[in-house]
Length: 374
Image (cartoon, rainbow, N blue to C red; front, side, top):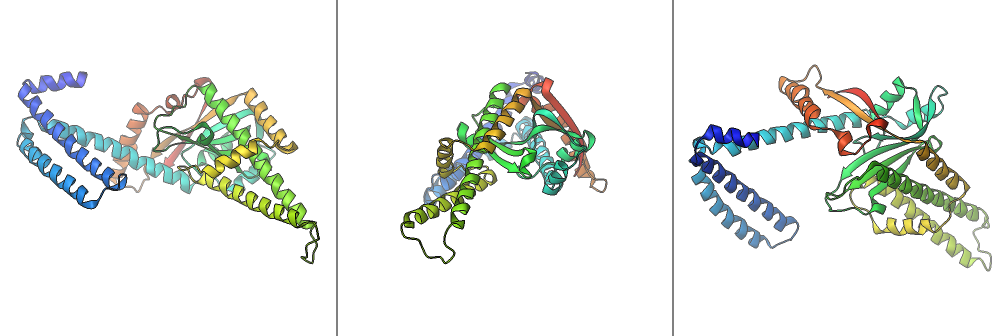
């Protein structure tokens, strides 16, 4: 509203407002023509001569109107173009520095050997509860985790590395929203979780999100232990076969069952591996295997691990959020320093509040500060 009042006071006449409005409308029509052409080419798979006819006709008409409006550029028509340039600079700055930040995390991620050393380190204390560490990385452990443990030698009894990703569909079903993977060593209770959201999905309140995450985590644990138990059963039955390779009469059906079970286990393992690597397209096979797994009761170790997760949830769920300060390297150019040190940091401090977007309660939020040199 304040911007509208300023524009009206500066233009003083409706004639200049009309010139600015005309360029804005015609520019929007040109952009719409280009977008519809892309939809015809990529989505609708329209014949190329139809696309050429549509694009050429509308672009000729709209370009004629646009060239006529450009004659009024100095009489108020510059306003929408100036707004567009400012918005492009803002979005370009944000995207450019976010890309540098992601590359920094990717090149400085924690190795699996560090987690093994951490599990054997007696100086590291395990505190009660579940710790949710948010990161942009889909694979690997972010460097903020190493920074946190180095300064505060304690971690929660269950650690979940959470990455929230948006995918270009309207809604994601609950059973397909959470993708989990175990981080070795398994006894350290560290999990990788990718939360997939459509453009109409919302995280909702904190309690609902925590319940969904723990519920899907227990399903993943049950599924994983069932696969391990099936593998052990197949290996045990194979060891009991005759060494000569000849089949004992009456066991042919058993051998066929073993082969089918082995194929089923291999397919489930490959499905489980691909599910965490593919953040975009869930497969129907994983849904079927997940539904079959739910009908099988977990073994003792799986039941014990699920009870451990439930007990940790009752003790509290805590959120670890990186408060990263991104700065340009000393040998960077002046333009890069201006974009990173001033432009991006101004946008991050004034227009970005991640804990409110993700509905993180302030009473259970722990910020971890770190400097990224990009």
